[in-house]
Image (tube, rainbow, N blue to C red; front, side, top):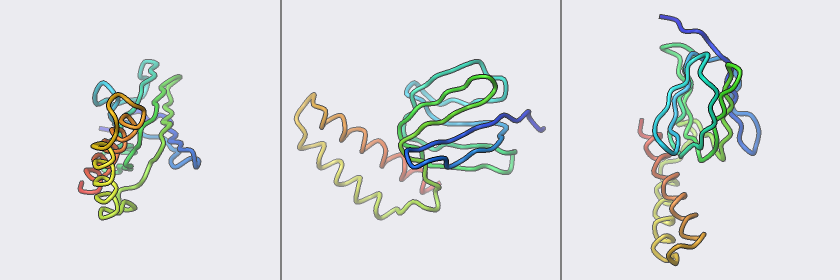
Length: 136
């Protein structure tokens, strides 16, 4: 069954990576997974690294490995602002595994309750999420 479409824009610091109408947006916020359909109530959410799915139709899904960022839903449109949005086919699994090892090692060396520790924890979460997206 076709759903009503709404505009979605995905922006990174490098610029727009997606701008089109979709039937549904699916991602993960800092408090859990979320799905957005047309005419959703206004919303502002912090996004965790995860897989971003944009459903143009039931069989046409655009996927990204998304970094941390924000989701804004207002006036029947959605804006996704993220540090990174990478298509799964563009992910280099070997590179991600090496980055994850390095991030975990840096986390072990980081002093407790410091910005360095928090940065390393974010890096570990991002690389783990990106590896999961690369496997799907």
